Length: 238
Image 1 (tube, one colour):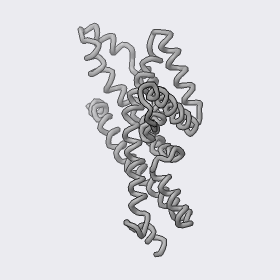
Image 2: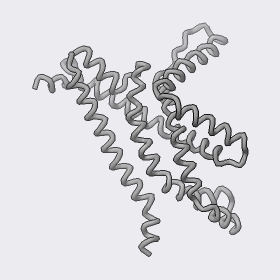
Image 3: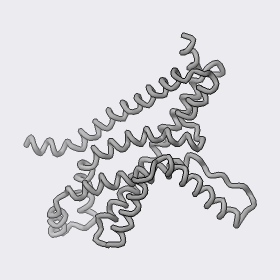
Image 4: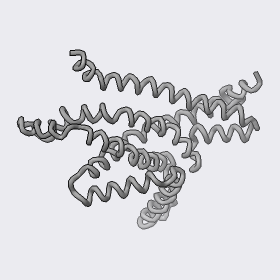
């Protein structure tokens, strides 16, 4: 019972600190997701392009950031962005600039996410029969309408399982951001462990919290997949 009293809110426990860290973790993952998806989609378009320069640039980008350890990517981007922005600011001001850790973490995780997401999206693009876009254009549909009504619905359906897995990976990788002192769940857990000398208990609480995030995500993603496949199922029943 004494151990669980350590999770009390206020000055007597660490419940509020861990909850605040959990909010930062979820916020970081949610902020990273759209950035990573957009960047991953652009990379997939580049790699699927008929322009050799775009294909080469997309392949080089994804090869680099899929090959680097995520922790090293975070450190390089955090330190590199901090130096670059400080140099730019020094040209116009003498004030000391400090890079926002949340923003740096979002950029670093977003780049890693995009590198893997581009593979999933590229595979989904190649799974769509080429005759369908050609037939749509032959019927007089614009490129925009072809993408909106023919390509995108199938792209989402084909890519969703892989992107769902990447989201779960992203949730776990947010824990790496603690290395740059962002007060996420893992960092606040480490602080609690240092103060209470109860590593097993607090790391177990952190594990259960991440598992809860994964469970909630799995339920939500399952519902999204059923919605995305609804039209295909109805077509099969017909």
